[in-house]
Amino acid sequence: AQKITQTQPGMFVQEKEAVTLDCTYDTSDPSYGLFWYKQPSSGEMIFLIYQGSYDQQNATEGRYSLNFQKARKSANLVISASQLGDSAMYFCAMREGRGFGNEKLTFGTGTRLTIIP
Amino acid sequence: SQTIHQWPATLVQPVGSPLSLECTVEGTSNPNLYWYRQAAGRGLQLLFYSVGIGQISSEVPQNLSASRPQDRQFILSSKKLLLSDSGFYLCAWSRPRQPEAFFGQGTRLTVV
Figure (cartoon, each protein chain N blue to C red):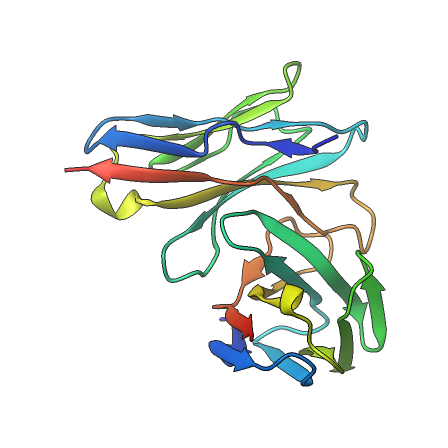
């Protein structure tokens, strides 16, 4: 079974609108972390936001927020007031466990976001 | 501040030739180090990770190997490349027990 599922292969959004990128995950470990990365056409992976499984509040970083719904096992990324520079691939990822050496990430297949001027 | 260097940026190699990709991290000590591969249009697959010098864990059986000869150096190698080794290879580091991983610029490998 897929551990990270991103069901939107591509999205087109008008500039300045908000956009939600979907991510669902599957784990039986009570301790885990969820991440979103942005990959522009240059290829580098840019860390955007992190949510721990025990965090009580949804994570926010500037225009990025993570809509964490633990019971539904979803961790959607919300980008407010989208900009042309937001056009990129977006990957959801998960780290299971908190033990030493368990910091490896499992990635979803990504969503290609295109912002339309 | 911490930086991660990965080279070369692009590489075209014939089938059967050897491979050596190098990754170094500056500004931190005892990082966890990772090699990922991204096939075209797909997500990242973890190949190897290391929590210390000489300590390598392999995630998938393959034609590749990794080594960590120094604390902040991580090398991805192959003795004989296959066509299926083509892809985008990313090195990453993280602080032990800290959540975020930081990625290098990547190496686009084409095996011909």
